[in-house]
Structures are given as structure tokens and as C-alpha cells.
Image (cartoon, rainbow, N blue to C red; front, top):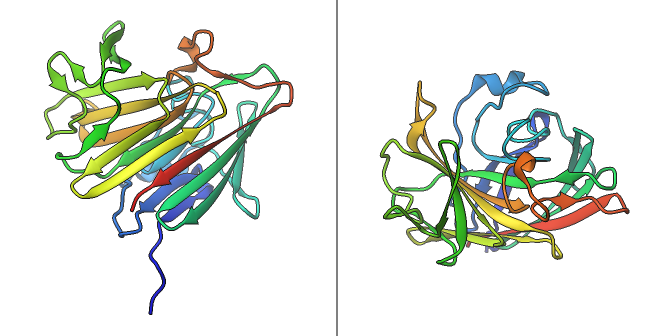
Length: 260
């Protein structure tokens, strides 16, 4: 008799520590990816190259630098995980799988007083029928020309943003602060991501690109991105919106992903 099926995850340490596969215990692949030859030639300081998967974004999600400073750097194996350094930060990551649950333990080391945001920038392979589940009525913001617009999740100008929907040429970047758990439902499949952070600020960023970006060659991409921080742009953070490194010089948190 075969053993019980478990979740599986594959990462690419040489190319930014990117997660290239996340399969549920049932065998469902959750991560979307695209062929992008430029990704193999990136160097620190280069413009972001989107190959899909899940990117570790630190010390910011929105630039500069766009998607942070670690996605373009090689990561090192540490025996029980991986680590990378860039921009004055060191990020360590350890992954453990038990059945249908993946627990990722993180630790940042930096000078006391440094501020940062971290995002698990997960681009998901989901159908137009999928839904993003967050508690209704939460305050949220969406990027608009000239700044940000506030609304109550999930309805924006009569549109239910929880419905991923068919391609319609629109692109939205939404942030829902002060929430630690988000669930994506696609048919009978569920993916739940939770950040546990011992009182640190959390949120969820949501990239809803229904073939509206980039202008010259648009494609569909859906990003569901747990945050350590209340917004995705470190430069726009107010008091309490980002994480401040304490006197110990280290900050830890966990990301738990469940997918039966």
C-alpha cells in the first residue's frame, strides 16, 4: 500500500529562491508560470522579470527596487533551508511539509531600526470561476491614476473583486491591511495562506491582471500575496505600516499554506 499523499514544493535557489511549483496533496498545481528567457540573466538592480511562481519580496513589494532586492540574487542552501542577502538584509527560510500543510519559517537579520515589508508574491494558476475569500467589509485600497482609492472589500464600483472572472482587459492592484489569512477557492480545490507574526502588521496584496498588462503584450496573471506589513510600498508606509527591526537585530514569522 502506498503512503498518504502530501503537498510538494519546488524552489530554484540559483534564480532568486523562487518557488516554481506548489502541488496540493491531491496533485493540483497552484503556481502559474511563464517562459521568460531574460530571467536567467538578471543581476541585482535589473528591472523585474516576471517568470511566475512565488517570489520572496523584501524589503518592499512595490519599488524601488521593484519586487524587492532578493529575487535577482542567488540563494544559498543552509542544510535545512535557504538564505539570501541584499540591501542590508539577510532572509532565512525553512520549509516543512506535513500532509496537506506547508509551514515556512522565516527570519530576517538587519541593523536595529531598519524598516521592511515582506511579501509572498504568489502568482496562481486559477480558472475564471475561482474566488478570493476575505471577510466582507474590510477596508481596502486600490491603485488608481494619481494615488489610491479606498473601498470596502469586495465591491469596487459595482464589481465583485472576489470573483477572478474572465479576461476583460483590466488590471488592478489591491491591498487589504490588517488581515492574516486569505483563501482561494477554485471548484472543489482550496488554497489557504496564513501569516503568523506575533503582533507584527500583516495584510494581503492582490494583483488582478485580466489581460490588461503589460500594454505591448498583455497576459493573464493573478497574484495573491500575504504581507508582513500593511501595504506593499515601503516608501509609502506610515507609522505602524512596516516592520521595524528590534534591538536584537532579528525578526521571525511563519507562513502556513494548506491545500488538501
